[in-house]
Length: 394
Image (cartoon, rainbow, N blue to C red):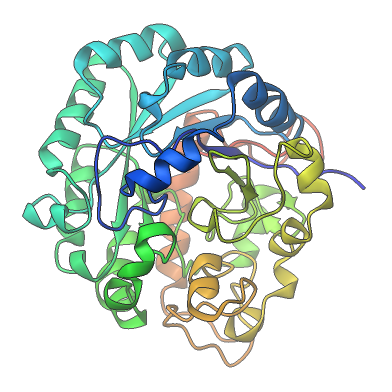
């Protein structure tokens, strides 16, 4: 059986952290849990042999180094250097506290400038502290330093009820400063389980507050759901490139099926927010590419024909896919319908009122992606099976 191809491996290299965010999905705000887990962290050699080299065989072009706080690993710079030596683009996902100007300069030097810094900004005002143990000012300073140093930059905005009113202002800021971003849902993983029932967004929050802002700009990397892209348009633009049934070139809608995620102890999942909850195996037992080839979880998640409920009868079944994390955390079924979606299709003939706007924004996105050399129009593919990269996904 031919291996599926994936774009990115997201690796939580440690659970250690210098902050105590109340809804931390890795549980890094619990010192006792961290002390127990830290003894099981993978070594540099294991990361190379069991994750990075197998990831290259799966077509991965980018590794996102995360945590906890990735920079608390003593070998963080060695891992960045290793990634570059293996031909991988490197993203550093950080809470920003450890990203002094001097450390940013070192990251730039170690990677030859081939690094992107990703920070979280859930709100630009004091409400940021409702979810992050820090003010947004620190993250903003890091973004400004990155611009001066020539490092790539990216913002992750966790969406929940606490930032429904402020979300538009946050997106306006990042777009105005030409910073790419993606939204990440608050989930019941780790410490998030304590507040998910109270603060998790619902379909009304998504329809009224988050979705209008997300679909307005191409800066959000088409990484959200519901994503009302015409399947005919994506087929035409991509040349039919897919990872099983998950559309690629570029990947759109739900990221599950395009990503590989690994936690600090080596457990593999289909999405960062599903780590510790859904496992496709551990790289200590078998290398990453073998796990992916034999895992029922990956067989399911890359086959959107298996989706159920509204997602299974939707015109956008493949170009959106519904949020697999929201399906799982609300119902326990990762192939079930996304209950936070506000679209109620009768069948595949039901067209969303937002399809035309989504198509326009997607076409703008393709222009940017092509100019950056990370989208290849049909006829310019290196081979029929190759899965091209996508525009600066974190």
